[in-house]
Length: 115
Image (tube, rainbow, N blue to C red):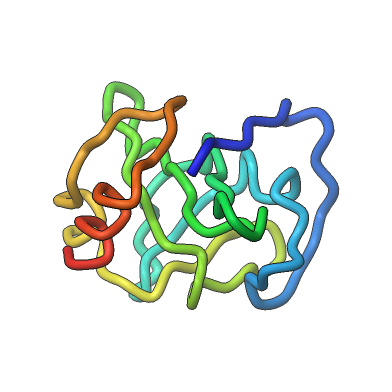
């Protein structure tokens, strides 16, 4: 999967469940929260499925000097201007780190799903 990067100024607010037809531009810059309401960080990039072009993963910057953590967009939800991820913050922060801005290989994606 290749990342989809869009400038924050071009965002449009959107609400509802994250679905395959969501506009990836609407996710960039949103704050992400875990299932308990703890802030994870801000969505930096959205990764699209190579075959379908649908948004599948988001890279979330976990802090000022943190790293980007990958979170699955399904079954996450969009609530007002936030992305709600149904996992605990600690699990997300401990996910494998593959760096961002590069293609996410099928093997890396499988490692993320296993985590």
